[in-house]
Length: 255
Image 1: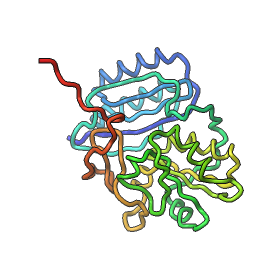
Image 2: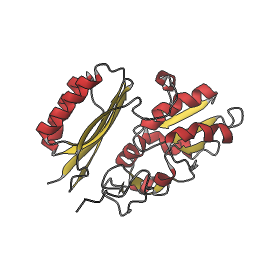
Image 3: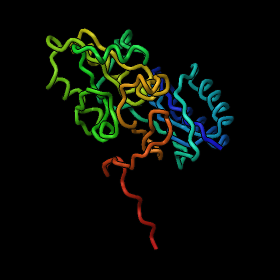
Image 4: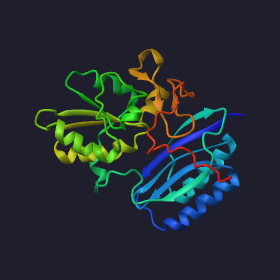
């Protein structure tokens, strides 16, 4: 049997986080759903997996709990990519450590079908918004690697290397889109005239772009046991290259 993997997020005000956590953890247990869901006052972010029929039922639970129509990216894998079911309450669903007005990013989303045209323009700075170890696995042709260890380091890199008066057009991307949702408003606040974010991230681009037209090079790092996916969203050949701070060795079992 193939397991379905779905990745989703949404920025929307949430209240009663402990109650949400309890409801989702219970539903994950009942439907044999594994993975991680992060909830915060600013919204939710998750990657989970399960049998396709169970995922369908769980999606209904999510939509009722969050009072939304869930938009997700999906792929299949022959094995479970997660070992546990986790629901975590955090201050941010993706940590930039700055207060961001998400609505300032309205109008910056770019469909995968338009992405190639934008990043092939010589006046466009193509910014990879991911961490260095993710970029090492694969990235878009000609993209700038900020060589950061964590997302919250990206503002400093941009402020030290780009000037809104000189670099007017920035197109950025990340795995599923969530980091760009926060960073696009930040760039607009800094004064960058044209800001583009790849809607749905790399995963949506690979899903919708024919291989012969793709400007993606390498594989795409993902945060589960698959490590990376190839251009067809199947498990790639990449071995885990995450630093120990991200992927610590397993604890030894006492004898």
